[in-house]
Structure formats: C-alpha cells, structure tokens
Image 1: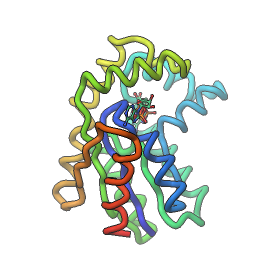
Image 2: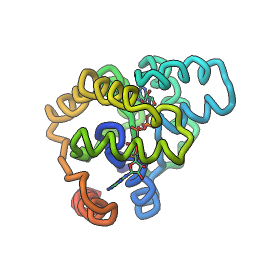
Image 3: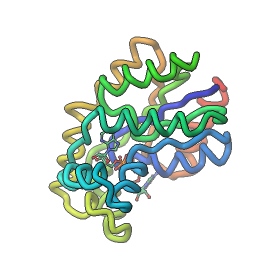
Length: 191
Ligand code: B4P
C-alpha cells in the first residue's frame, strides 16, 4: 500500500493536485473537506455542527474528523493506497491516523508539503469564492482566520512527520502543470 499526505495551507492546491494524482496513480482520494461538505449538503447532525465551525474558519473537532476517516477507510478495503487531502490537520489527528494505518499493517510513506505565500492564498480563495458558492471562501476575514488556524494548529503536522523524515517541501506557486510535475517526481521516487 502507498499512502500519501498532500499537505499545505488552505488554498495551496491540495484539492487541485489531488485530482491529477488520483487519476495517475489510482489512489483512493480521502478529502476531509469534501466529506464534511457532503455531510452539510445532506443536512446530517454532524454536518449542521460542522457548518457553523467551517463558516467561521475554524477546525472541526478531532474526534468527529477521525471517526469520519476511520469509516471511510473501512468502506474501502480494496484501496491500493490513500491520498489524504486536508487530513491530518492537528497532532492528535496524526497520532490517530498512524494508529489506524498500523492496525492494518500500513504507514504513511511520504508527506508532500506545498509552499505558498499568504497573499497568494488569499487571492486564490477569494477567486474561488466568486464562483464556487463556498461560504468559507467569500469573506477575507474568514479566509485569514483559516490561515491563522493553519499557522496555530496545522503546521504542527509537518513537525510531527519531520521527526520520521517523511516531509518533502514542494514549491506550490506556478502553473498547476509544473507543480504537478514536481509532485510526480517525488511520488515516482518512492512508489
Ligand atoms: P478543505 O476542504 O480541506 O479546503 P482548503 O484547505 O480550503 O482548500 P484546498 O487546499 O484543497 O484548495 P485548493 O488549494 O485546491 O477545508 C475546508 C474546511 O473544512 C476547513 O477550513 C475546516 O473547517 C474543515 N476541515 C477540513 N478538514 C479538516 C480536518 N482534518 N480537521 C478539522 N477540520 C477540517 O484550491 C484553492 C483555489 O486555488 C482554487 O480556486 C484553485 O483553482 C486555485 N489554485 C490551485 N492551484 C493553483 C495554482 N497553481 N495557481 C493558481 N491558482 C491555483
């Protein structure tokens, strides 16, 4: 099994590049953002609770996200590997993911960390907000709150995996194609 974390701040291109990677390598795409948005669309209890937090630019509680990831992985026993997109986002989520993978005799192979400056992130997310209908992309104050959550809680994810020498930084500014080519080089060297 090949398990990859695509890591980076909100708007760094995780969702965009995930599409290219799953098409090329046949990994199972696990985006916690997409799973949460589908709970919101279905108006489940979990979705209603998550919406308030997401609309404020805050993270959803660890136990909620970890439960969702566990269910998703159990629902895909045939997967030849997972691409984790937007997960883990806290150290507690890292520890839980390592445990879930260990129970199945697996591990994270690499963390590819997209590097993008804050002003470029804000520009991209406001751009997406103009057309996507995503309520967390339309307001600059909320976008900056998401980036603050990332700086306060999520950068610890890179520190966690760095202790196992699993983090590779990849330039996340430039064309989608050139960034994908750099990601592909790193995956091909390890898969
Ligand atoms: P996510 O759905 O994970 O969304 P994201 O981080 O905002 O965006 P992503 O990084 O995938 O977007 P992309 O750059 O591809 O999270 C949303 C919310 O869900 C979080 O704020 C949180 O509340 C909650 N949540 C999710 N997971 C959680 C977890 N594990 N724990 C707790 N809470 C969680 O795209 C952005 C834009 O940039 C697009 O318009 C794209 O076209 C553009 N773009 C991409 N690459 C580009 C390039 N190279 N050049 C120019 N533009 C580019």
